[in-house]
Length: 275
Image 1 (cartoon, rainbow, N blue to C red):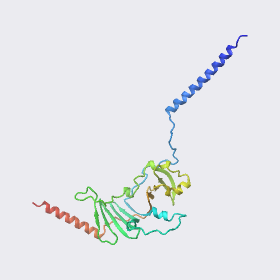
Image 2: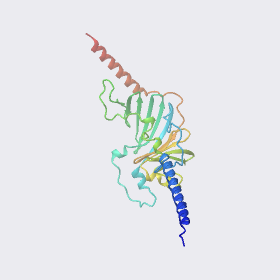
Image 3: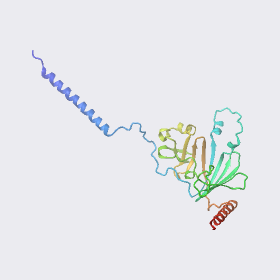
């Protein structure tokens, strides 16, 4: 009896054809994968990035108050923490600001500062020059930035803050985490790492974010102005007031001091120009 080679041959042919099809399919998939690589590690955003600017500068005519709390204060009042007597802070700690009310009209900016002890001081930004008056003093101390002709660089000079607000220079698209309701407003939230650092669709993460992250900025979605900023141990809460009706006017004492200084400088230049 002869072996049925034909049957075996046809089976082998069908197997070869089937295997070839699988190989071709795999090759096709690999080629497609090479052309369109999978976004490994890429996070699909739950919150589309808002249009720029993400944060506006303070308007030319504006007034706002910043209330500041500090890390040790929040720890002392944390829920469940046993009340213990706390030592009186040193004077330098009490000199930290509690409230800063800023009034801005064009290039004139006035900051009225209340420290933790209730003392009030003032700081004027008059162009590039800064004038400060301590609590209880009638004298304005002048501070100039480095690079001002004839002025010695002042280590105590505090430059005007970025956009008019302190500690917000890190607000950027890469740190956008989404939106939340903050009080009666919808706010854009910025946290280093953005959506990779926090999921703002989870209420429990929103509830603890001020304790979890050392840097947070909440920006009102419509005005694009800050409402709350945490930067390391400080939390600043912003209250926006009615803008001033007219331009700021320098206090009489400061205006007289500036005039005298300008007159003295002009006199010295005139004397130096004599042969």
